[in-house]
Image 1 (cartoon, one colour):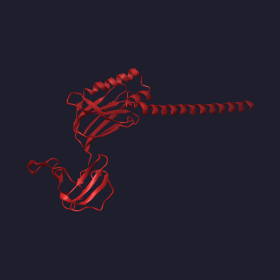
Image 2: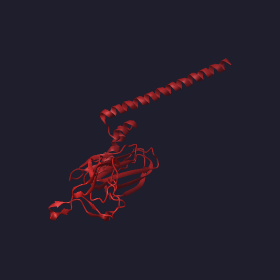
Image 3: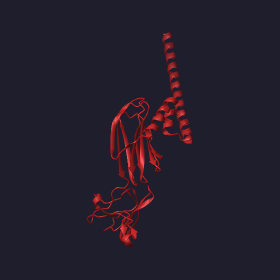
Image 4: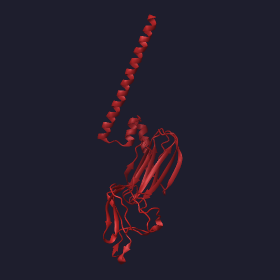
Length: 272
């Protein structure tokens, strides 16, 4: 009986020591994580540098992985959107996918990478061509490497280069889905492009001035809609615009001007 009690006491002591050790390890991991976050706030490391540190990637392996990305950057495939591609990532295959496409102001580019495993890391970077010289690009957007999506709204017409690189040990089938859409919704309910009869910049008064608007025709009573989330500014009737509404787009720091309306709905404040 004394031996049994001694055994139980030792077992309890061992379990207590294990709990203390587990708690100690948790505190160390938490402390390291907090130190890394504080350090990152000061040094602002790139996503790839965080990956190298957090996953203990050796200097030699990381350099090979990085050099492969730089080589692929020089050899991009020109694509038209929408575009899709399927394939498979293999461990230490160092595959990199590089594409070039053109975007216009007000177009929103979106990329989604689908994989069988949610744990696979994928690094996505988007570069904008800044000069007519070959391969003069500047990075304008990158993803959170824990997420496999990237969205970017172009502010000017340019050629853009997209680089997709899986983590070193990635092993999964993949699918890339790329598309572009207008930042603004069509401002007339159920409207189509054929309803546009006059575009921004069209000549007026024999070329003496240009048209600073877009004319969209529809049947009387067809609703106009908010082309983006915003808030109603002025609404009423005055000047050449007749019945008009101003929609403030705070995201882009500009206003949309709806004019020549048949009537104005009783709407104010924020709209979607």
